[in-house]
Length: 413
Image (tube, rainbow, N blue to C red; front, side):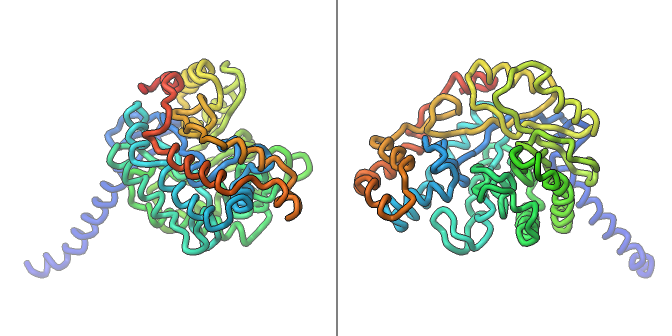
């Protein structure tokens, strides 16, 4: 009898182990053809918002133009006006105040079911970024949001908005005007390593819906003369997914098309992994079926989910019509963005501080020499007061709810 028990024990333990893994796998959002399926078997349509500008600042949300369009340009302007120490403290408070637990509660209360978190790759390196010059705390920042989302029951998509070397070649990726990621082996290695570390950290977290590998890769400016950039995208995705799967076989990986997440002709092997879905972006078009049909056609051809990772920045009337169009076509959505100073086309607006226009005007000046910086620099105390007021104004309790916008999304403000 003892011998029989001894022989059967490994089989029993293996069976228990397998059952546990299967049970765990069933707790994640999964793919079934063009649909996402919740653990209880119900269909899940993504309906939510992007936490843009929080940990990847963009100039237009500060009312800045092309002279201070990306984080490093914004940071440079602030340092010129108030010095590096004050600027570091500003960014530290910015990260604390921009998205708080009250913001997450409100998003849930409107009826949304998920958020997308755009992040800068530097948050997972030793590079200088947003007031920290080494040992970045990306996991600490995102984990805080994830836990608040867990309390509220909101799923999370993680989006690398700014990749090593730059994947877009424009202000949105905080790069140097070219998608160097597509040509730099060092950047590709770092890109894959960061995603592997993220995947290892969240491998067993069922609240994470998936990993959005690259935001809007390869802007259209480069396609005519640099078609090889498009050809490099799918191989890079495959390489990154392979790295992720060494530590995480649970989560969905989201792949964006080239040219602002709009060109899906670059994909030749659309099902190289068994947990893939696709993500598109579309702005400033009509709200007719023809304006979304190319995305529907690709989705149907690969029989995998397609979701609108970004859209919006438009009138309430457009928002309402576009939302209904997406939902009729089984395309989930995350609108862009949740919060900004620019009014109306977001869920909540940050009141613009007094004298902020002085800062805006400074960013527009000719600052190509130290002499010119000294000549046009505004009063330091005035600028410091405006920046401090912004930190206070961005707290949820001081923001203005745009109820018409939220209602246009089909949510309850």
